[in-house]
Length: 146
Image (cartoon, rainbow, N blue to C red; front, top):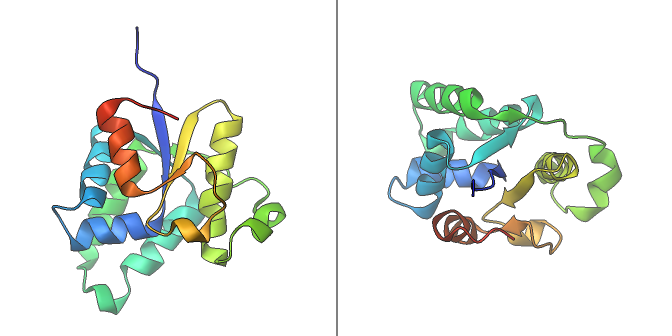
């Protein structure tokens, strides 16, 4: 039996943690995404958010490291519309998080097994497809999709 593909909208905090802590759970998730174990779902709004946050001076990330990461993610991502993000604004307290939730919902509506992976679970509604990086790692490594 062929394993079901797993898709994930990776919140920006996952990428930031992955770059700042190379041996962290988020870093392992990004490696899985780049290696094909999970398929990132993205769009231009998500990439704009990634770029803006990763370029913040407080993270001290070299521009080349950021562009290489974003290019690599773009090459393995499935582009998914954010749908009607304004219709779900009430579900997320942080306006920057709406695009991740909307993109995950659009991907799920298309029949994909899609998760939203975030280190800020409190910023999203409590739903079984919204998971922490650790929970996503467990899903990948143990094959227990929700």
